[in-house]
Image 1 (cartoon, rainbow, N blue to C red):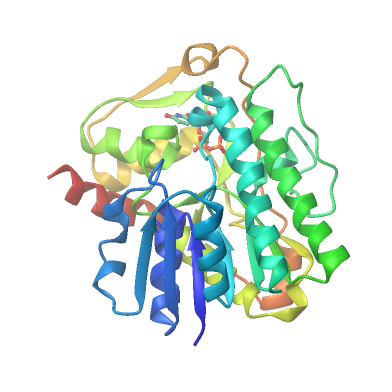
Image 2 (tube, protein in one colour):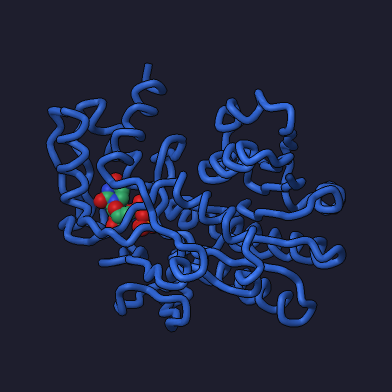
Length: 323
Ligand code: UDP
């Protein structure tokens, strides 16, 4: 049993992580400014006597100092996330992602508290060397294209985390999360699975961007948070970077068909050119698949939940919400 601080604890992934930690018997504190998270995500956690939360920003250094002092370990998930938000609020993205991580690391280093930093598969950028492996080069686009500000800010976070580990011997684990989906994720910021499921349940056309041949590999949030916890329990993970996700690929057009089939929807599929879907400076990625060799070797990680089950779980959640 440990005292655990989760930043971004009211977010989609953060709230699932909070529940998984509580289920393991830990005392959990969440901090979230509700910028993209919501208090409803904590409905289950709030029933728990071992849970407490603060609606505040990780930029509040005084509060963070207190919370990190009280914690044995920190899962740092608070960040500006989602492609759409990044394109719309570039200043906010860069500042939150870099300064927030700096604060967590600075404060945790003083007391040698263990930290997990959540990075993203976005850092691989436009690399075409699929699957992406942790030591591969990062291939980022021009600074005139806002999408890459997100990848860059997260890459700086990784450098910082690794530097704290190297220079101060601080226990830091870095995870690069690939497309992670499940209940509570909203389609508001562009994420494809909740968008398709909501469109299917409402009988609206499913909006496939481009020709739909681009692929992704979707991991269930429950599998992802279990991996994060296990890595924090494994000393050999310190100072290391891990891909976390699923390596089963599906094209976006096939995903649309699968969502329609599994929800029994009458929806059609509408193909929308990228220029119409996004800002003209946006570049979509053709394939994104993690190489999971490293995490499999260290903790025996194997994603359990299939895309069919993920769609069913998301649809069940969405049906409830639409009521
Ligand atoms: N996408 C789509 N329709 C939508 C939302 C997204 O076809 O309504 C596509 C998007 O262009 C991308 C894929 O689905 O190729 C995954 O998008 P998401 O934003 O979920 O994740 P990311 O692009 O960050 O992998």
